[in-house]
Image (cartoon, rainbow, N blue to C red; front, side, top):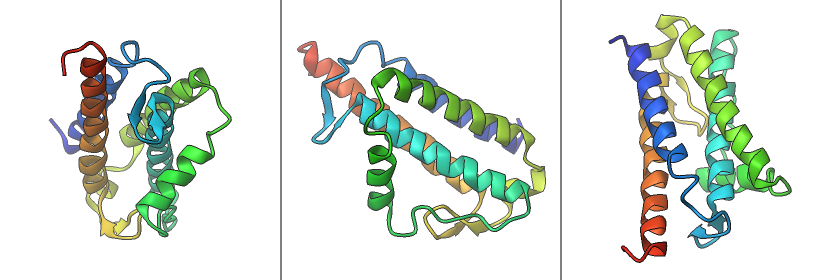
Length: 157
């Protein structure tokens, strides 16, 4: 398995885990104090957007932007608030499409750019490998939190 294949597998796995739960969770049920599943998907799409912009910059030979330079919490709030007026179905479609776009870009990025160090979306230095090794497990943590809420709703937790 190549490094590219590993990165794709990590993101496909975390996405599949989350999407497998979406039909089980009530759309208005809180996952976190301020977030339902709609806000969580908006949050995950926001980070996919940041990764898409990051990879696109790398492929165009540009310096990647740092959309989360003011802090991860600020970026999270902004990525959710920019999708505030959108209904669940729209946010869900965006969640599916941003991941598809991200995976397509990872399939196309030149191999040498996968392990080269750049400024990451939050301002630190790192590689695309580092980013995927953060975001795959990050999405899985949200999926695990969603599983707990589903279990509690069923009286199992």
